[in-house]
Amino acid sequence: MDSNKHFATNVYYDRTFDTDAAKILPGEYYFTNKDMLIVTVLGSCVSACIRDRVTGLGGMNHFMLPDGGDSNSNSPVSASMRYGTYAMEVLINDLLKAGARRENLEAKVFGGGAVLRGFSAMNVGERNAAFVLSFLKTEKMRVVAEDLNDIWPRKVYFFPRTGKVLVKKLTQTHNDTLVQREQAYASRLKVTPVSGDIDLF
Image (cartoon, rainbow, N blue to C red; front, side):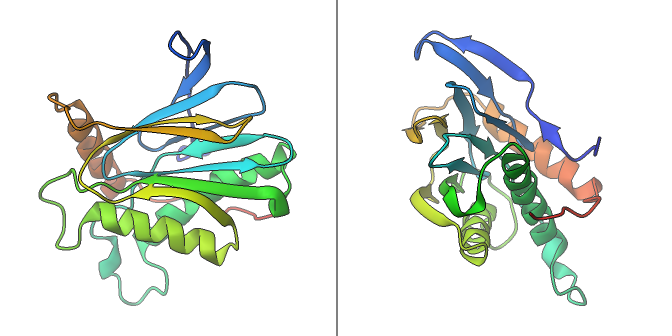
């Protein structure tokens, strides 16, 4: 199995919503055809919630474009764009392999908050948000909801079966866990090459 392909394994019972839930961390993704919840917390990272609106098969990813990958001027597609494309294609392809139909796919996108200090001149959250919208436009996938940019971290609850998404802005985060998690993820991205091509169906 590709080492870059991180299918989330943290599945638990969520008492608040009285349902099974999968929690995804930076660099992970999850999809399901069950009536359950997928949850993540986003700072400058973005998540695309993608589902087949007919069958309710859906999933969510959580990724960031690596910083500094855009300086490679002799490449038509920068290293960071390749990484973002990979993160999107892994989720979309797994949905298609599981029985989703491309023409039924719709997306809701979240994140890209300006919560990490000290990233490059152009805010990494803005780059992530711009990338995910551009990717979906290129793929001709309908974006039915978005909550991008701003300065707050967000907790995103996605119910693939119905397509419902709840977003909670975390205006009172006093701990640094989220920032530390995203900074560690950003550091890992700098040393982990994107491997393998993805076949689109």
